Image 1 (tube, protein in one colour):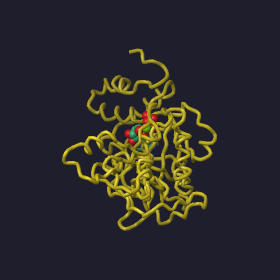
Image 2: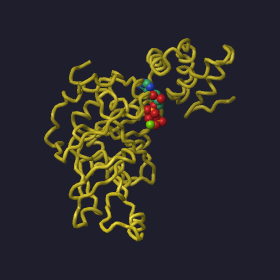
Image 3: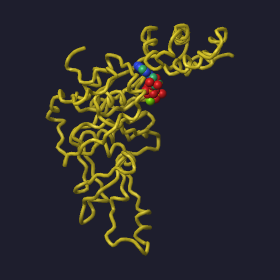
Image 4: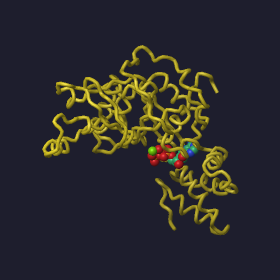
Length: 327
Ligand SMILES: Nc1ncnc2c1ncn2[C@@H]1O[C@H](COP(=O)(O)OP(=O)(O)OP(=O)(O)O)[C@@H](O)[C@H]1O
Ligand SMILES: [Mg+2]
């Protein structure tokens, strides 16, 4: 393993008292950010410990994840369904001890503003109209930062942001995002318009999480580790691609790698699953299958009689694209 790698794909968390990011060099001068006052990251694991501790990344994925960390650039991860695109974010958060992953699932209706923050003026209006409303009521109680808005808070260590399925977005979102990632900051006009533009707002880290935003502007300190996933059905503009580090994931091609993944997930339950791994590879030549279909088949077929195993496995591993099963 080349020694410039900070994330190695080891599946272990940081050793007690060790900080793997201690070896991460300062950012390139054009990617240095100085937001403050600096905040500690919230405690806790990645939020998906099983996935994080069983993930076997390709060498290419490890290398490109490190390039994104060094260059302070988002990582665009493409590849067919079930190749571990989303899981990569959890694996990096776990190994480097970067705390809970901020998950931002994208749909065709998602806007940049949804990711940054939500302001709820109606509840505020209602509260102000009540007889017992406090005279100086706190606007921050009606502002909640979204996953993107939270990731750009001035944390001392990078937060991990998963922008999941960016290919599902409206046509403008990738460009809007790259502007934000370029600047590493955003404004909350509802705050900047006020005489006192500072407020304690809620974050995407759960109901109790609050931070103070000063001068109505959020600017990052450590640039977040951003993973953007795409099934690759969409072309992104060159201006977007130029500002990302890219990696394409592939289905593991050999029985050895598949068996290792099955053992990683199922431990002793993975014994005597070679026939299913072979069947998965056989079927993979005629249509698309995903690794987690194999995991389901191995888990389930332990309970089937030997004579029924193959038929059951085929039912659990239908083609995602390609020939239609005829039974
Ligand atoms: N290389 C791998 N090592 C271990 N487990 C893997 C690997 N690749 C995929 N898996 C497992 O397969 C499942 C699917 O992974 P994941 O959800 O990350 O895929 P994805 O590429 O994001 O799929 P989709 O495009 O459908 O969102 C998970 O249970 C994950 O743990
Ligand atoms: Mg995914």
